[in-house]
Image (cartoon, rainbow over all chains, first blue to last red; front, side, top):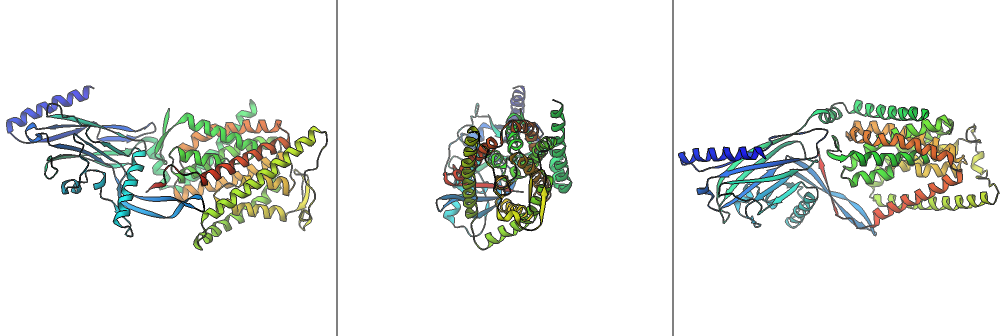
Length: 253
Length: 302
């Protein structure tokens, strides 16, 4: 891990400069700001480094969140009808849903009902998403819980509460896995220092990760959208030619 | 080794996809069925979005059926005239099926009734085919040869044509009607229809089993060709990386399937086919009866 050593040295360097200026700070850096999805993409690891002034740290709570690009989704339920399992025809439309959400902290604070958490969307329950109008509060709670389970299964929700160690009250880091199903777009990275009782936001640091498709997978994706008919035609011709080829090869065997 | 699928937006082991393609290609070459019944649930299980699974599979089955069809064609195991007539009925039927489905949904019929009806048809067809093939196999071992079909009244309807390959001289009305009904079932159920078409060609039209398989592949080529282009054009859900990996295995599998098929007796083919139909019906029935792991399905919209 030579890179991480480099970061540690850099942080110490900045730390002592800042001590000279006597300024409070919360600083971070990301291992990989640009993630490209290529033909061999199987997911990526995001490492987020942080450094904090021990004076302001003072054993308060640190939260790191990664929020993926917002998308619209459709939630459908399977119901039993006449003893058979079928998909319900009605579905729930959800908009503004983050396609990925990760959270890490040095505490295990589960009750994040304070305004600070809600305002900054820290914690699964505080994510702002919009439901179609006809849903009551109880149902909404149930759906948010359901989404959490589905997201955990798909590994697009990562929770690392109580898993961040603050080394010497200064340095910390956290790692998140981004699965191969990651959506392209902008991933917001935020670090917060919040007072122990959860009322005050002491310091914040933000940055972005950009996930893009590259190489042949990007070209194919773009072509399928820009020339859908030709794309289909080429796909069909390709399949027919492969069938011919196999038949010719086998004739000679 | 894993490969990223650009439309499905996830990565999957190449080995798994090639072997799946091989298995489905084998069935396609041997029985003249598309293999969607096996592939769709498998791909969805791997996490591929259902719409992408269905569309990419149409493209992959196209390759497998071309491969299988050419192998049957070299052995002259197909009836072009009969295939074309069935196809005409099929095209009309599938257009009407689309509207029928729309109507059924609009008047409040749940798709569940259609699914149950389809499973019931498969069970009835599967078991009667099983019974017939077993009794034929017994007759063969007794040294007797049984005539497969009796001349029914509808064979003698007007517009009679000579189907040389099928050794038939019958009216074109029954094949058109069969094609039409299979077309409706295909578009309402979203399946290829091979499971109904093949038994109908054997038992209702009285075609020889070996000829039926090549003729069925002819249908599948047409259906999958049209649906590949339509899915790509309307929904943009054809993943060519996915279908390419599947079809590498499939075109080879289809050649092997054809070679195995020509070594079997017609009764043995019908026996194996009956077992497959019963398995498919069982799988569909289980899907409807077994409590799902998660009762919710989440789809991202683009």
